[in-house]
Image 1: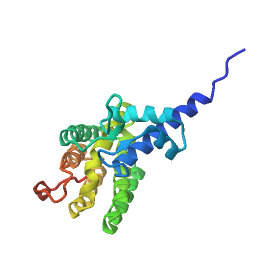
Image 2: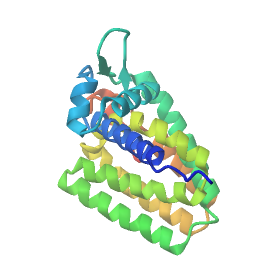
Image 3: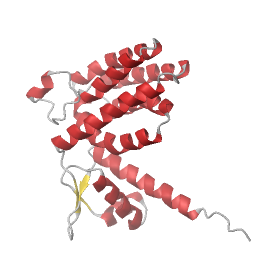
Length: 229
């Protein structure tokens, strides 16, 4: 008789990805601070899962530079390495430029409407000082051309490196410098609506490449435009 497809492996894969996402987000949003020890048993209890998906998630997080593990020692949250952030920023900027180029012809009026709505949420979040909501709205806006590009390799690269950039970017959106981002969003949507693909692509690249990886919002490097994503 034909062997039926087992549901267990699918459920396991979904669980593994969910555990990874929860731990990744907790590192990015500062729930787990740089240098903090991450014990798989405690994390498993916190998430209500076995230790196996937690261990798998920690290995993946190590691969993207969010945690550090030493043989025989507890895994710790990686410190914010400026070189790593710069490298990730360059990759993320290039991928978003490519996404705009590949998506421009496929973007619909509804897509542009969705981007404008996300920017309104972004502005409102900045006005209220809600950094989490601002970052969520920012992600939603830039996700539109990424989705329209339908490039699986591009999406995979962004999934790997965006969290590294976001750790530094959170400090940016807690300052007034982040407010310039909304104007850039407006310009991006306008250029896409006008069919100015190269202009939109260049703006998208500059938006992400302008990130100042210095986590100290009061440093001298904060005097320029900073992150405008």
